Image (cartoon, rainbow over all chains, first blue to last red; front, side, top):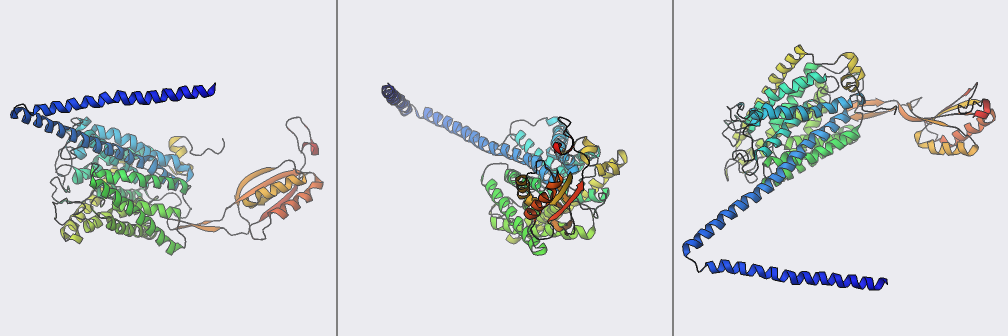
Length: 485
Length: 112
């Protein structure tokens, strides 16, 4: 009985396939008369034909624009999500692994809190301060509460994506930048003080710096009428110099952790840091290649430069460590990769893959020396090396961008016009230094004033007892690792 | 009744445990431990900072056995845990006054 059943099934299957072919036949034929209709219009008057062609051209243009928006917007939304992934879980794990286990949740919460606090603040006021119309130093209040930030593009910023996509993408940068600072004051700052500090910092340091470099009419903007056109593709000055230098100021102001450097404070889990660093590497493609603000060729060159910079720096940091200490550590390799990503951030989108290798290689060794030699020399407790990696790497990257920027990759000053020093535009190096100097000055002064105010208002540091107990228990009433259950 | 406490290299745990079960040791408690004897620790580097780690991972075994089992158990541990290098661990033996099985109040050797 089973064989006939199979036969019936096969017959039915053939019937369906054959029927489909026959049924499709008339459908396919049905298109022919439609084409014939177009052909018959040829016998109509010339004016009608021109009108029809014009309409078709307009329809095509609309369709092409829609297709480009779809493509660009798709990439930009993914990029925005990738940059958020850099904060949580990327940076939270990277920093979380480096502290002692009694502080893991406190450290992770500092980054996570930025994801919430800076987002709300961005909607209320900081987007407007950073990207709204304003003067050369800061944006105005036209876009507070995201007024006027709709789904139509802002042609000056990004012509092919909704302004809201641009807004939410830039928000992710505003989140990770203050989160980077938390590495400097790890294991000793009050959660409440940290929140107030970060809100003020976003208002008075990040917003003006972002406006100067990326905002319309900003002092350092390279394309929208800046006085000192500074090349910063994805945030070497805006993100890494500001966060790194502010980190150093905070570490100096707060002082060392109890017992530092006599009491050993090794990372409690390099494994967590390892996962975090790998997430940072992947997320950084959204950070840098996304900064093309479109899915075109520039995004590809930024993507490639990012990857090559990270790889070269992981190798050069490891090599330096191998030579100096006899062993290449996992923590060294991932720290090198982050240093390379930092240094390539301003340069991605301006440099060739070979230049990216150089930038990464230099950054790996440079940041290694900063973290190992310079920190020990001065004795400050930049607990997780936010300055050594981001401040130093960001400064180096901004300067190297002025050297390696290439008009073939990105003719930002016009086709064929020299961009960086190696192409013959020595003046660019000067502009880069102006950008770096402003970022350093604003970060030092702004951070110092904010720290002073917050210290007077509510106090910055936790009590000695709370510090010994750990931030998890003293600040949040919980523990990351519960050994008893 | 006597209590045997043995601190051994973690990598030797399975061999020691199997040998003890084979000679008839019924109950055993195993603890992950950290410590050091005469063995010096090692140094670790994190971002160039040197940390000397002198508390090394060890495994501690505890068992209470009858007097006639003590020497057999000691021999079983020594033969399986010894590598001949520094850091192999130590065995401590002490008298036990009483043993009580919680389930049914049995006391003495029968409770082991």
